[in-house]
Length: 505
Image (cartoon, rainbow, N blue to C red; front, side, top):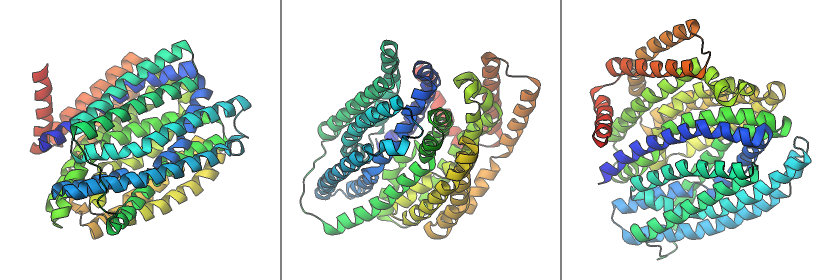
């Protein structure tokens, strides 16, 4: 059952990504139409700010998954219940801290954005902030139930619920926009959907899985371990916010909502790109945690790292190479000519992201082995460097400057420093992984050359031509990768997925 759940979880992760992207392609232009550039930029700006409140989860969700999975593997029911009870107490404290911090920031919004936002925008910004703070206060303690579901590897349920929300939410939002096109209505609908999803997860964890929450003892050793483990995951979450959300806050302070709107389109494309890689990671965390609890041998983990990395590379390289060739035309048709610069902003970040995304299993491995402290410290230093570099660049070059600052930080931290750590400290065979990846690169170079030549002679004068060119590119890429890049194991995986889809049809 567990193996089927993992495989189904991976497939459903990509199904969820597919729906998210397809719906987003329709949803975002409609939001821009209803809200306008300024209101959409305001929504993204406040979302970037409130995201810092969301990380006040302090990484406890992944911590619960790690320790709860360990006790599941050892069949220790008492410690399973104890971990959840201790986590509930800690979450209660965290929620109070978040609310206090949220109130303080609320009264400082005028000082932070007073020079870049109009009076009306500032009023709406405060209203959005209040709604989102209530949402965060409910979301943070609910993460304990998500951790329980993931630990029991019920990936079909959790991915299916995500798909349902992804599909239904935009329809309700657009219906509300037809009634009254206002950013406040958008935020309320999203919050209602989020709370509804939380209630369903609580019911599933408590009544289907029958998770038990009981405090047997205040295990000081366990609390200390969990606190240290959580702190460095929290640091990673803060780093991610600095990398991918702080730029919008910086631009909101120095440039206003219109520039934020353009940058948010670039960030959204980058996030789609990230999700294609990272969406499968949570499927493997319980398995790697169980392996690490029983043995220090890296053979099975290295094999998993290479297998997942190769599959991720085949997918991520197709997305990146296709975006390099067709991304600018796509953004103009999708969001409008005013958002053309989003292509360059997105690409400057997307290229450096390729390496860490195909190695994203490394994050899962060091979390499972409780050796993520170095990565957190190193990335925190790089993130601060990113902010220090992005502020002056934003003043000089706007969104392009912010993207350059982020890209430079990604190259230093993810291409060089972390790979040395993976190889020398964790025991991941990076040299073997690099050979695997380089062996898959020739078909990518060939199809890119074909795409560039075709793009030069056939202009993307309308959406139909662009669509045909993209479909042709994907088909040629798939054929070349199948015959020149994939090994038998990967061919069997993709062939198995296609055969199952064919049977269902």
